[in-house]
Image 1 (cartoon, rainbow, N blue to C red):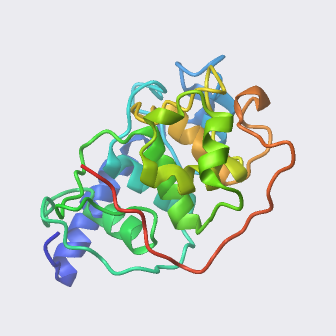
Image 2 (cartoon, one colour):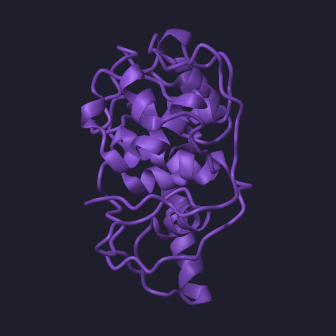
Amino acid sequence: MASLNGCQRLMAGCLGGAIAAFPHTVAAQSLTDINGHWAERCIQHLQQRDIVQGYPDQTFRPNEPVTRTEFAAFVNRAFPETTEQAFAIDYRDLDETYWGLTPIDRATRTGFMTGYPDGTFKPTRNIPRYEILLALVAGLNYVPQGNPQTLIPQYYEDAAELPAFAYPAIAAATEQQLIVNYPNIRQLNPQQWASRAEVASFLCRALDTTGTIPSQYIVEQPTATPFNRQPPRSIPTLTP
């Protein structure tokens, strides 16, 4: 990501804000495609808090995938007071003209997101479910209390699809009850592109919004592990 002077950063932020803010005219109660959806209450709750928005045609499109840039914008709005704990990264596939430069920069500085070993961010890449959870665990500084190698197979039938380096983060997410699996609670589907509804559900759990997600889809331990936030640490490196 090329370094920005003050004027360039302001222009990029204004452009990104204009694109992100365009759907704001859609009221939560007017969305036409979430009535009866399993994540309806969560989506409405987040929209009322201006964390997610609908589109100008009064749809939310809950089953559409989310790009890495879009998630950066979501997580910044969900956790606006998070302290910056890392340095900005000059991702080589971003420049001053990209509308998502400001949300990506903020999500990187707060520790929620990082790039790939080749120095790219891949801003338009659809983000898989396990990367959403990696981001939330990294940004919230959660660490697992139990043995990830034991916990993951205990809860997920498709544990073999999860990259080995992601086990500790997914174990921590499980202990903190961040994970929502619809329709089968035993299927993590880690490599599946995260839908807008799924991203909303993970954010609702991270924000501890009780009652917004049907309990039968929340992965819960018999006894919830108390939140355990640790000092800032390194963010897991993603593989391309």
